[in-house]
Length: 261
Image 1 (cartoon, rainbow, N blue to C red):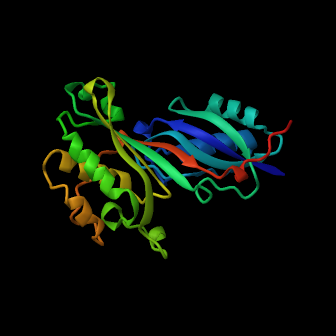
Image 2 (image 1 turned 180 degrees about the vertical axis):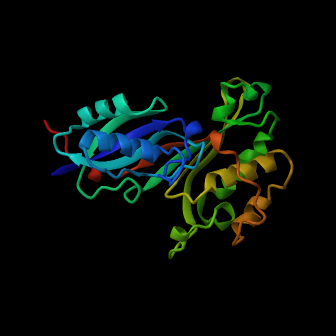
């Protein structure tokens, strides 16, 4: 018999080719499943709430997996943290009900994106973890651009087309939060965004376009124009991956297994 768990995983994306296992290249899924296989003596599939790209970080990625019942939430967390590489860390493990799936059961996801507008953003201690833009942005234009994308929209202009997205609502997303915040010390800006779902490269396309608006390279009205388009041919290039962080996935409380008294 096996028991399903949800791990909240942090990882530094610098040296990974993304979450998803690939034929070549180091991946987070490959490392995580490799440890589970060593612990359980067999292949164990781990499913993430999102498929981050190469260089993207996570500070609360939901990862589901099933292991033999001899493993408790506490013991599997200790074992994972003892054996995972140093650029990965499990914050918490929770027991879930049978049938739980980290991606399919998520009702929402949150990301943030960091931009450095000061000269110190080029420091080797910051560059790997933010977009080292090194130029000032017009904050008011960023705020107005973010307000335009709130709510339910189709986002083909802010996505890379993928086969699994060709469904009855292939590009429809409901944006619950889209806000820019000034970082302490004049370092730049943080973009906070939450939605029921995100498309491939969607956050990076949104940030890249809003930064072009904040730099005065394109007018604010382009955000509205792009939301009406059916392709991404007029969209600004996506922001670089190192500034993007997967923050959290949201799950209904009914999926969590009762805690024993």
